[in-house]
Length: 318
Picture (cartoon, rainbow, N blue to C red):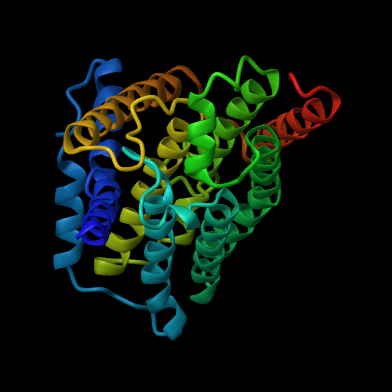
């Protein structure tokens, strides 16, 4: 019975990241519209868009291979697994042993690789441009993510997220400069990986600047629904990752009762709301930068990750 209970909690964790993902995207859009003195779309509009896309027929180009049809499901599966591994309302779940930051980075990298292949598969110019830009940004974003992971692993003594969250809640963590640098670097990586302003604007399809949208222009119907849901899951994943590492308060410990689990779920909902407001405020106060300046922006995250790692080697208290 105890194993069954842990299994049910793990299933709840998987659904807990899948169902609110479109809601977070809708919340960010709503807050941005309010900040611009507009009414904006309803909060549930992303759910309606996904349902509408699922009902539509998928139109596939004659030059597309079987890989073009399979990639949306591969990207969705990799992103969902990575998002489900990040502790949201509780630590020490049934599959928490696999919730490793390096494994999550590898899953996200695999999803990015397959999406870039999909952009080039049909042979359109926009898909090739988007894939090349995505890979150019990935050459800096992935090393930056790994350096941040190494810095956190040197501090917490593990790359396992439940262990990192428990360490961050303990008095041993203290006030460290390397943690602040790692948090700023992770936020920059999250903005770049999710194609948000100032790296990309998900609300436009301007061919000279778009990155993510250029790779998925040929998708439609249920395939596009899988791609859109994967993008929404990826945004929630990075918010959950930042909250788990740097703001782990409210996480229910191993073997907690139902009331503690519900409190952890409420705390996680509050974190999502704060992150949504912060992202909306940030995107309304900054402008999109030129494409050729994006590597400099992501390079800052790489330098911060390197500096955080070096500070850890220089002094254990930093």
